[in-house]
Image 1 (tube, helix red, strand yellow):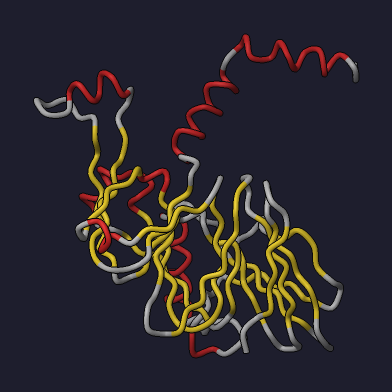
Image 2: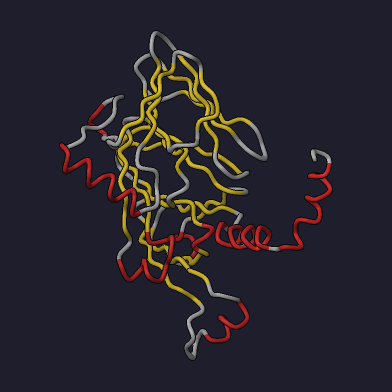
Length: 263
């Protein structure tokens, strides 16, 4: 039975899930907003598995658990998932992303899976399997954060977030291939092939791009027939902007006036 859900809000959307007794969703740490008291929380190192019903997936023993944790550490993720289950009747639990933007439910029917960038996950049903997908060492060196993707398969609802607004495309409608800034990629169906190229290296073709474009950027190529979801906010550019603002000594002039109110 699919989890009943509703997306509320506009500039910073929130996901509200209504869980029937025995239903479970899992989420990354830090995504919870509020819940009713009959929704329990468990933190587990084990990942979900599609054959585990509403409960957490089998750990596969200590070695299997260690491998799962190791992959998440390499991916820069939290060590464990938080599982939310309704006990003694229907319950509500709400989640949100960490940046202003949209939320969307992706329904998996078992025939097509999804790859997402590593911060897109908000929550998923316990019947949706999770794994870390590495795009290859060469791609990793060129693509930076685009090296690590999260893979979801099985059946059930998967909830993802974007910064700004969602942009949905299918490469098949554009000659079978599109190129996007890696900082704008949210996710894509597993029928789409993915590779990353770093633009801005100092060679005959890209030296001018590096000079005019700053430090260069990672360009993702997506090929095939399937849905690709982008976000209108470039996360890489946002991170660089925030870093400059935080590190700018002159940028605290406005804050000084506010701080004076509480001194």
